[in-house]
Image 1 (tube, rainbow, N blue to C red):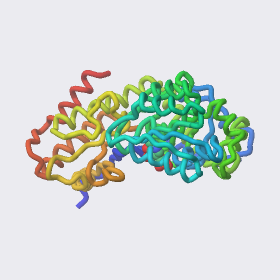
Image 2 (image 1 turned 30 degrees about the vertical axis):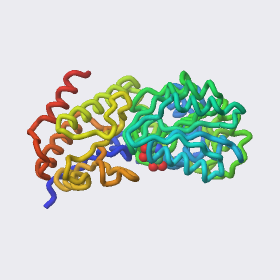
Image 3 (image 1 turned 30 degrees about the horizontal axis):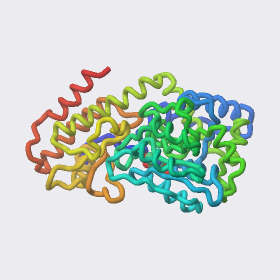
Image 4 (image 1 turned 180 degrees about the vertical axis):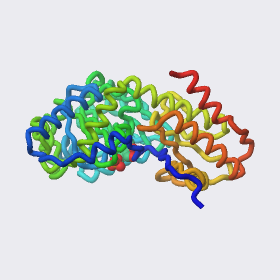
Length: 388
Ligand SMILES: Cc1ncc(COP(=O)(O)O)c(C=O)c1O
């Protein structure tokens, strides 16, 4: 017998979609070559610039986030270019694979699960690159697989001093915490619709600096559908090279209006508050976090080890079967070893309160030792009371 009537999706993407955003897709289609659509796209780009705190050009690609990453690699670099990837997890590895796929000469700085990129290590690699062979440095703002937030500002400082393009995968990090594209001098910033934008999957929004645009002019790597140069040219006119995902664009307009109304500061604050609540609750329940460092804690997701003797997969299964709450699995070598609680996008304090209460029941039923009713819930209540 089913024990619940509504689902709660607590994974770091796709995230729940608000009714306003879901309904926006139900509008009549319009010609993507019409004047009103061009205006809609130009207005949307201006609003996205505000959220990204940038004057840089914005392109909207009809693809998931990885399409934006691919457009950055194939669009801004040329045959034989050397690039540096600073990888702290599964999505860092994606930068490596992508760059290698396009034949770039890839140097890698890799970190153990749960660690953040050390800006001084990046600085040391770049300092050795006297003849400036390294043309770009790639990293994640937020590494979703290990629940780590990198220090984008510090990383950008050391890369700027060298001169390589700064290419940031902010797919799961954007809107969960501060990202000052212009102030920090980021060249290519990739974001994805199914994260804190609160949209279904299918759009990648990419911010491109003047310096990156120059690189795109001369880039000779193969590309067609995801050509950054073609997308930039068209975006200037409120257009896209091919038919855009018009329904998703309508939804993006609705979501961006909601975010604008809420205000960036409060969007960041609500993510920080939920992150603190989840981390504190897990600790009170005696659960070990993959990333124990609060300074580099992901605002989007928390990665948690199960108690000794209990399988992470059993926790996820019981949360789903008994309460309709979906938690994320680990990825790569962490598959089955951890569970991840998403707190990204359209998630409320009451969702987290419920999830932690259900986690207490789940752990207790699975025989976790020392579960005292309410300890996790109280930790959430404390954080919610202490923070605005
Ligand atoms: C940090 C990060 N980068 C890249 C991706 C890949 O994005 P997509 O699955 O939308 O292609 C994800 C998706 O989870 C992500 O979290």
